[in-house]
Image (cartoon, rainbow, N blue to C red; front, side, top):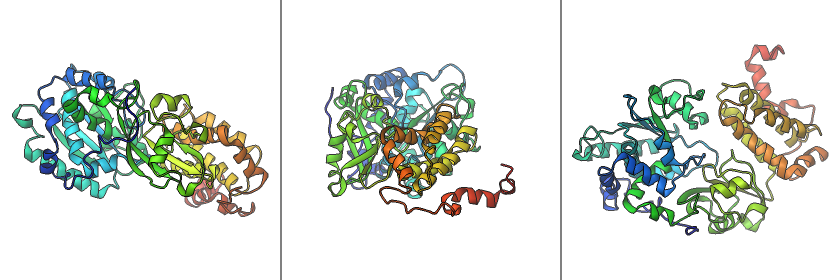
Length: 455
């Protein structure tokens, strides 16, 4: 096992003044990794990623080098590299600072990764709201072209790599790689049926790999420093540094970088501890789509295996912490309303299930819950999890199922007391259903079939 604790690797240039400019970036080791990449073969770079043990930093944690090795090289079709910069997971804000403060790190990573899989075209799919970031990334790409790091003749080697920035329309579903590809091709962002997988039939039906900003940005560092440098941090199966988004009830929320395997309690202390000295009540270890964990899990090492064994996921690396003032039902309702709103509507379990789960949770939180509602919640979750077209359905149900598992007594208290026990939400009279089921009221107003009771 390597070192743990707070580190400065991927974020080491964040405080360098003007490093978003290519001249300053070059003064701090910029594009040295690319020079090395141009002397390596594709197989050598893929093996380097495997030796380092780099795992996807966008949520799934799949080994990046192994994913690259799935790209067929003999189809005669162009190969595409796509960077998923559609950072939409609630509580996640690690990629945005990297691109804002050190944009050439991603540009260099795209060129190196493109060379590794023999791709000649790359796309950065950026979340639509990131206006300033879009301008900064566009400038960085333009500077890289001017310097000869991009184009038909990269650094005079005869190798080609063109890079394009594409702004999405701010849909959470486009964080799912096949929905992202649909959007990139100009269609509605909805997930594709798999197989075939993007590795063989991705963008424009050609071999494609889709990776996270942090995953792609790691290759220039590895080329310069080697796999052992990366493995000096973390665990055997979860090596390396990890950009972290720590939010909620801590004294110093924000973007941090830790070695994987660092105990969660140590991360909290590095953020100044829990806010106002209040105790931790529950937390999401990897963003709002990951199952809740309890204070009993606070000393777990923060790595893929340990979090999985505890019944949750490392996800995007968004540690969301809540103290004892927070209501688990209220927090879960807010998550559920988000996923209900962001459902693309393609499949029935997610499209209809999100609506009904929101209604039941809102009923509980406003003091109108029924004893059978807890079983109803679990039953609906069981009929969504693993049955939706993509993982958004799983994301929708995970906080609810884990909330019922670990904090059932608090859910029950909402029913027996007829109110939110923590006083987060004022009780609403049962007769005033317009306040309890507001989304349905809007739906009736907009849909004549619903108004007629036909749907």
